[in-house]
Image (cartoon, rainbow, N blue to C red; front, side, top):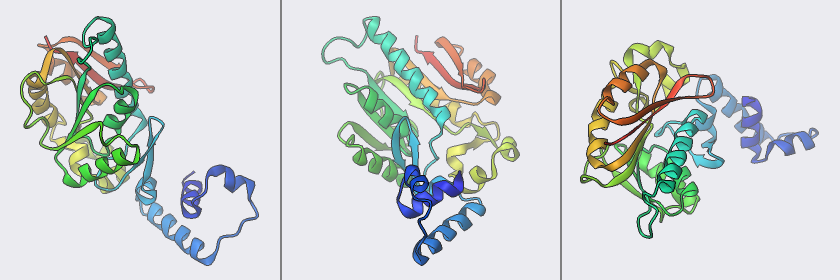
Length: 266
């Protein structure tokens, strides 16, 4: 699959073209570029960093080593937010004119969460923060490519720094949640090539989330929601950290692994 993907990248053709033209021979230049791409992949470089692209929520995203590669599991975060927003609107909150939901994506990276929600919720006000200026450049480029740059307000900030109390209806994040003690369990290509501060939070994996939860509580309006991607390793600890919140729920991914934590501010 990697060989096929990199050949599509080299030729700037889709998969159907490869199968429709089996007689096609690569030019010396194409052969050289293909071999270079294969060499990088054999060396462990993720295919997405070689091609510069990754699909998420049916959208094509630019990716670089400055940002975490979007993963299918993170789509469960989008699904959770959409469901909670639907229930909120049907329940009578944020449904009157001029009171559309306000959302912030904390640690936006490539911008995949913010852009997916901007696509699905055209009336919402969306903000996105990141502590990496290089990451924000990637997110802003993606927003421009999808003509969503006027919809999303990007902020160079550490978590929710700079936002006042009761600002948002949703605080959403795919924060670093892997502990340093789990480093040997993480795929080599993730350890070696993806941004370390987007993967590892500290010794336990809870360090960033422990800072995010109280900040989210302050910046959320009454009845607002915190939605985070997590791992099964920290699921029980997350429940304890959210003990003072309402409707705490852990949602599993398709493999049955705890993947999304959601909680409502009292």
